[in-house]
Amino acid sequence: MDNFFKEAVSTIKTSGTITPSSKFLIRNCLKDIDFNTVNTIVEFGSGDGCVTAEILARKKSTTNFYSFELNEKFYNHCTERFGEVDGFHLVHGSAYEFDQILERDGIKHVDYFICSLPLTFLDKSDVDGMIDKVQQYMKPNGMFIQYLYSLSRYRFFKRRFDKVALKMTLLNVPPAIVYRCTNDEQ
Image (cartoon, rainbow, N blue to C red; front, side):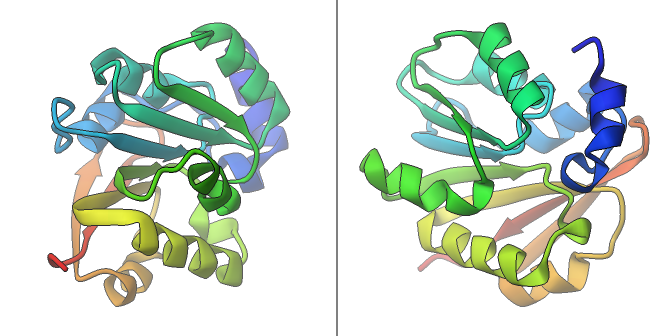
């Protein structure tokens, strides 16, 4: 997207960054996903589509992939960039309402959630509600993957998930921390 910087800066509280994710951050986010066995992936925050593109390149045609983008310019960019792809559902709307879309489509469980939302800037009650829904939909052995630019949400994730693993990605501007959150088998 030619004007990513301008759009990201003007919407920093919802975009959370001023540069697209590096290939190193994308690789770090997706490294634990076995794309051969995944049924459903949900992405919160398509942005310019850099993570979205890599998921689309790796997923099976039978995998349901939902990507939510609230920013109209980013949504339009991703619509033009990706067009029609089997199993891909680009949603122009809030990630907080992902459950309504999944329910509409009869999706009961999600293997992986990938989130780039700037949780530090968002309302705590909204984030709590979203994580409640994530946990209702996340399959046993599923994972919530979040990348942020600080450790500010570590204690929050430790309270909400059974296990939280951290991995730093230095080769990104700014350097990012990938949180991998899982629950014990149910």
